[in-house]
Image (cartoon, rainbow, N blue to C red; front, side, top):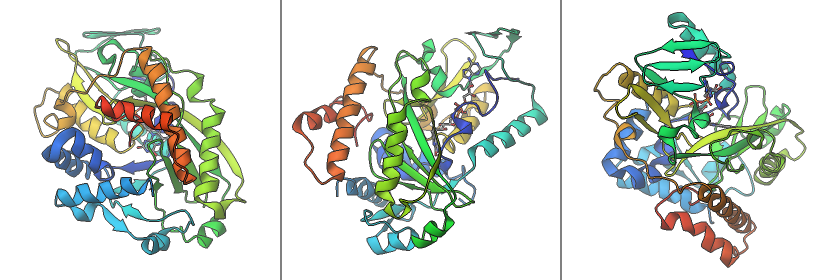
Length: 381
Ligand SMILES: Cc1cc2nc3c(=O)[nH]c(=O)nc-3n(C[C@H](O)[C@H](O)[C@H](O)COP(=O)(O)OP(=O)(O)OC[C@H]3O[C@@H](n4cnc5c(N)ncnc54)[C@H](O)[C@@H]3O)c2cc1C
C-alpha cells in the first residue's frame, strides 16, 4: 500500500529538471566519500539506472582524473573547446567532460507511468498524509494502517523526522523554461539533446526539450530550517532570477528567448551529497534519503535497496556502500541554518567573482572553505 500526502508527482519527482543519470558524473566525490572500491561498485551498479546505458575547470579535471585513476577513463571523456562546440556552442565554455550514462526525461510523465505501474500491483491512497509512524502502524487523518514492513520515502519532507535528524537538510532548487526556440538551438548546434551542468557548487543545469525549449536550473536556493518545507522552496524569486541570469550568461545566443515558466522545490541534502538507506534500529521501518538534488536516476537504485530491505533480503543491493555506510552528521540547528546560510552566501560571492574573473574577497574565501575543513562536502567544491 502506498500512502501519498497529496497526489503522485506533487513532490519534486513531478517538477524536476529531468536529468537522469547514474554516478559517473560524481565519481570524484564518490571516491572521496566511499574510497576506490566503494566508488567503483556504486558507479557500476548505477549504470543499470539508464539501460544502455578557469575556476570551474577543476571540476572537469577532477572527474577525468578520478576516472583515469580508477581505470575507467571511458566513463569521463574529456572534451576540448572544439569538441565541446560540436555539441553546444557558447563563448563562455572552455572545456568539458562527457559522461555517457546520462539521459533526460519528462519528469511528470515518468511519475504518471510509475503511478500506473503501482496501481497494477498495489493499493494507492492519495491525499493521505502520514501523521505518525510507529513500528507496525501508520496513522493518517483517514485511518490507521497496520504494516509489518514500512518504507519511508518522503524526500525533503523527511528532514524533520526524528530517525534522520541531523543527517539531512533542505535546500531549494529552481528552474526557468523558455518558449520553444528550435531555430536558436540550431544556431548554437545544440540539437543532440545533451543535458549539461557547469562546475559550480551551486550548479546550473540545463537541457533541451522535444519541442525545442531550454530548461535552465540553479541549485542555489535557500536553506530550510528545522525540517519545515515551506514557501521558501516554491516562491523564492531571487533563485529563479539566478537561473534566468545563468541562461543569459551561459547561452548568450538565446538572449531573445522569452521565459514562459519558473518553478522550484526542496531538495534533501546530506552532508556528503550522497544518499543513504537503512532500517531504524529495532523496528521494521526502512528509509532512504539524501539524494541531494540528484534523485531521478538514483531513486531507482534506492527502490532496489528499499525493496530488498523490506523483504528481508541480504543481496547485492543491501550490501552496497549506500546502504551500509554511516553518513556524517550535520551541525545541529540553528547552526545548520545560520552557518549554512553564511557559507551559501560566501560561496555564491566566490562563484560570481570567479565568473567575472575577479579575485573573490578574502572573508568570502575563508567562510566558503569552512565546511571542507570539518570534512563536509556541503558548500564546497
Ligand atoms: C526544481 C528541481 C529540479 C530538480 N532537477 C533534478 C534533475 O534534473 N535530476 C535529478 O536527478 N534530480 C533533480 N531534482 C531532485 C529530484 O527531483 C529528487 O531527488 C527526486 O524527485 C526524489 O524523488 P522522491 O520520490 O524521493 O521524492 P518526491 O518526489 O519529493 O516524493 C516525495 C513524496 O512524499 C510525499 N509526502 C511528504 N510527506 C508525506 C507524508 N507525511 N505522508 C505521505 N506522503 C508524504 C510528498 O507529497 C511527495 O509526493 C530536482 C529537484 C527540484 C526541486
